[in-house]
Amino acid sequence: MATPILHPNWTRPAHNMVDGYSIEITAKDVASLEAAASAMPVDTPVAITFLPGEAMDARVAAAKRVRELGFEPMPHFSARRIGSAEEFENYLATVVAEAGVRRCFVIAGDPSEPEGPFADSSALIGSGAFERAGIRAIGIGGHPEGHPHMTPDQGWQVLQAKCAEIATRGMAPLIVTQFAFDAAAVLRWVAEARARGIDVPIRIGVPGPAGIKTLVRFAARCGVGASASVLAKYGISIGQLLGTAGPDKLVAALAAGMGPEHGPLRLHFYPFGGVEKTVAWIADYDRAH
Ligand SMILES: NC(=O)C1=CN([C@@H]2O[C@H](COP(=O)(O)OP(=O)(O)OC[C@H]3O[C@@H](n4cnc5c(N)ncnc54)[C@H](O)[C@@H]3O)[C@@H](O)[C@H]2O)C=CC1
Ligand SMILES: Nc1nc(=O)c2c([nH]1)NC[C@@H]1CN(c3ccc(C(=O)N[C@@H](CCC(=O)O)C(=O)O)cc3)CN21
Image (tube, rainbow, N blue to C red; front, side, top):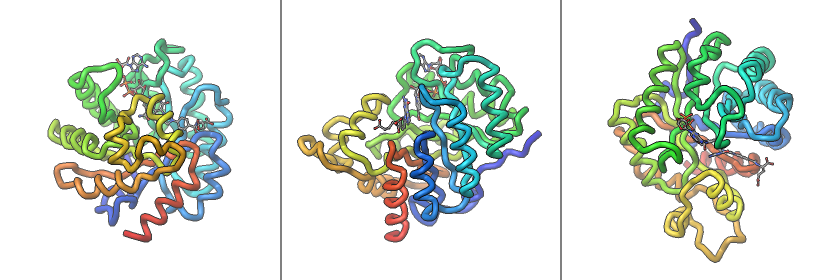
């Protein structure tokens, strides 16, 4: 059985909020990642999303490039967007062979009807394909603002069951939360996870600096809370939709509110197309803290 591993930086305390961060790209962001690479720590986990309309080859090429640049590729597997078991296992085998993939992220995906045999992320985990391919760590989604298709109790049950199933299969579970603008809601959710005995590493999803219109559009598309009061705390005032906004206030609020009751935490950045801007923001934050 493959030894479960996570990034080595989990074994020591973070020296600031961005220490040990991870970041997400799409297959189209490879050139921006190349441009940003010299400012990123070696081994930084780089998630590769699984969006509709992308060619499998483009995702594989992205994973390969992430590895060549010295980072740790973490391809996403979107259960409801996968057409067949063969498609799933081919993609998995190819990224393992060509990009040395050792960790994967599983998510249900937005289609209201599954496009193939996998209705949810548990079905991918339960297939046994990941440990057969030598995968050592599996990320799953956390939903601090609730889950569109489950009650809170069901959500906790499913989260706990997925963590247990991943561990039973000899891999390390990791939770990556949906991005959010509301630090208090995220910290409440993390504290509740810990109180329920979920002790696995959690990465808090944070938006990168982006145009305010882009942030609001992604929030609507992803079911993320973006009320005027939440946006105001984030630093966005309604009526000022033309500018850009960074996660400065969100990260400051997370830093101020974090305590031992929140267990092991790191950040996961969602750049929404702005990989270079996000990496520059992180580097500035790192220098200032
Ligand atoms: N956090 C992120 O980065 C992303 C989040 N999502 C959203 O997260 C949601 C849940 O993902 P997981 O936590 O992996 O759930 P999951 O795979 O553990 O599924 C939990 C339950 O919700 C049901 N379900 C999930 N998505 C559904 C949908 N689109 N329509 C109808 N029923 C659905 C499943 O059948 C299952 O019973 C997805 O619905 C998706 O919209 C999607 C992509 C990325
Ligand atoms: N419910 C849900 N569904 C999702 O698909 C989803 C989430 N949540 N949470 C965050 C991640 C991040 N996702 C994405 C999706 C698209 C781009 C992206 O770059 N899209 C465009 C360009 C950006 C734009 O639309 O302005 C592209 O060219 O593909 C990035 C991250 C999708 N994700």
